Amino acid sequence: QVHLVESGGGSVQTGGSLRLSCAASGSASPNYVAWFRQTIGKEREAVAIITKHGARFYEDSVKGRFTISQEDAGTVTLLDMHRLQPEDTAMYLCAARTLSYMDGGARGTFDPVKYAYWGQGTQVTVLS
Image (cartoon, rainbow, N blue to C red):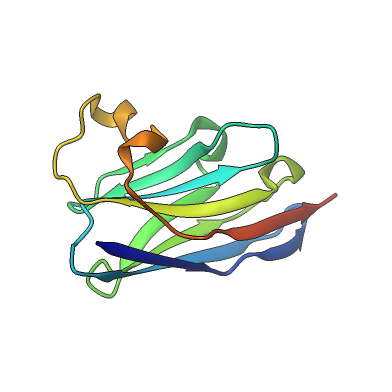
């Protein structure tokens, strides 16, 4: 079992920055931690993924603007977001997968059904 708690959301002007944090606890250690975002009427979208071994994957629209990293021996996963745009407005959710294999390879990491554990989310609002 993995328990995830997100923090760091809020409102920011266009072009601003935010840092999101996802704290993981429980009896199992994630092999993959991902940040997803969701808005009403749209499918949940992965924006950044990090593996236990440090590999990182990003959704195309956030490449060069968002950075995923980990600290505290991998128990905290950070998402640094820069040059935020109104279209980045969403509920941001942290997700974890404890299984070590990922069918579908790198693209598989973007699929929300691959993640068994989810946090409650933190709202990010970018004001135009």
